Length: 553
Image (cartoon, rainbow, N blue to C red; front, side):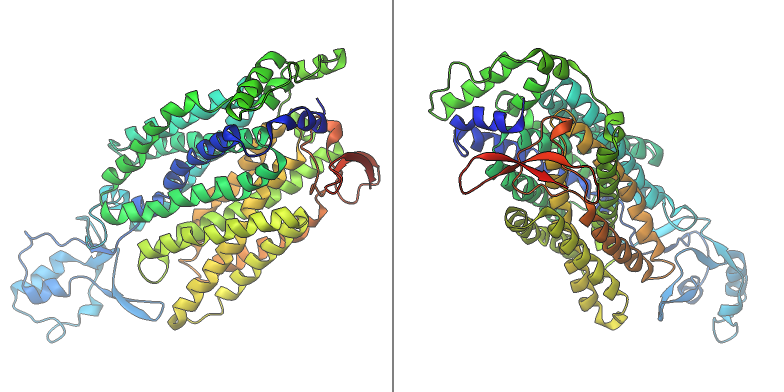
């Protein structure tokens, strides 16, 4: 069915009745656990201050015990070594002879060794993290960013699975199935006996987390009307994600043990079981599968909830060609089948990937910033609230391409300036980093809604999943952008800033979708800027409320 015909046939429901409010708030609330879980690794996988353990059984004097760890210079500051100590047998020999360090012996000239007896960790901030549990430091410090990357690999696979499954079996069943996967496997993760098991479970949690997010997003976009859809996609879903994100540092502040923190993250998921009886299937999806009676039943029930009399027949009987089109199955190959949809898909994948790098790298970096890591994480989450409000205002009144270009350019430019800030002005660097997060967050909110507007119903969830899957390449690499900062502090900001500005320019090539109804079939899609072939598309005349065909180059 044509997009405009669907909107016309369902206009009797209104925009903001009891049915729409219920769907809006229940689907938004289902996003809160995603914000809670997505960045939990900031605290679960943080690395506290540490140094080599000197066993109490080693019989050396207090003077020699106090100098047994070498002092190093790092970024102009001195600190004790994290990964080496002076050889204990040498120190014990000097101690047994009664020699005094720095008086009788030049300690800095002594031979060093690795932390053969493990490490002592600063317990002031955390009771335990996975780093302290399995000693993911020094020669094993590569496992910390890999832990995050494996979770993002789960998001990558979840993006692929959710699109395929929900386009084939329905939005609702996939939404609740993947929410269950996220909750149950997070709970099992609490009992992880090893780092390998933890990462394996974290990978599965990532599959459920991204699948439920994308499916809930698409389900709301397809049920709600145009005016509410914009609010849902830019403010509703995103702010509820931020609520979960903001709750995370508050809970982590009071729960300093990583296993108990995971338990606190998992248990709220069971509160969403009753939503199954209140969240409907997408009528648009049912129509695309030829299940007209079920779609009409949902809309008639919605009319009753809104106190409105529904027409006896909401949708006319499909034509033979419509039945054939609805019976056809679509998959990822259809996203690159024609030159136009292929260009749209490639451009969107590049934008999604860049935004994912910026968003997750800046979010994961909060524990490395100067100051209190709990406050930094809270501020990083809180800055998203005005960003999402701004995204809604921009998305409502401005062309989509201009929204993307301006916010990507803002985020990129600000991040490029971070490396010019001297270390003693760390608060200025934090302010610039938060401003960069502000720009990237606006763009991320916009790209979700923009992508959903560009693809037809028959491919929308597959396309959302594919773009989200492409963005996981960015999120998988994001922890290593932060890791590069250990070699050159400014390098992550230079890379992220340059990528944001470059993709901001590329976004200008995407077709414009402001004021357009959601396309239902391939033929209703907009044309990429620069294509010579002309295509008929649909526009909304807001002053008259009718729809007319216009020709766009």
